[in-house]
Length: 298
Image (cartoon, rainbow, N blue to C red; front, top):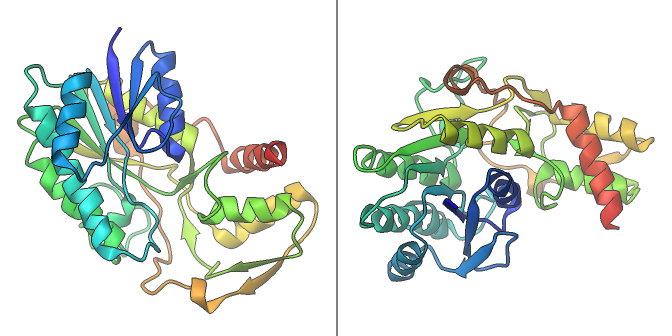
């Protein structure tokens, strides 16, 4: 049975990734410091190079899906973005390169946040990155570092745009909105809702990851996106329609980010060309599934 190593297996995307790999016949090993649904979980701090090396040598994976990252843009410890996202990734690649038999496939998840605020309608991979926060800067630095390994390891870098789905933590915006409606809250405090984002369903994102891995794509960067953008105000209206009432929106200045990106919409043409991938979930279905999942958890 082939072995897949998933970093960040306990996270939002990781839980779906583990399931997809197991459905494809992989024995899945999760790497991290929290319990996972993988066949085996190894406790490991990615910033500890010796610990990463020990785990990698123990697992000897056929596929590696590197999802672990410090991803909450509002995180206060700015240095931690670089410690985890850049040097944690370096520790992993170094350990993989030193195996007698390196993995057949390695997928490294970056972020569309690296693009910043390009003055284009739909962003493709040729757009020049111009990150505007430490999370995005750390991801772009990671990409440049990872590219140095392209000739030694079979790596594909993905740049997912915003995505959401059932079981995402409520510190992120869309699940926060859904949670408020599920609890029938009368008010919600938000930041700037006059921004527009390209939202995919996490299940479609994982399908894209699997398609890239199965197609043996390597040495390149690929957007993961729906190809359309939706205003956050529209999302609130959609969830309100599903819940059957309107919520009072209160703008909290503390939630308004500096350097807020007004619009992000990604081209998925390269992904489609390389793999034939097409999204299966539209935003209405995703929001409905999220609302139903939140009700079941109550």
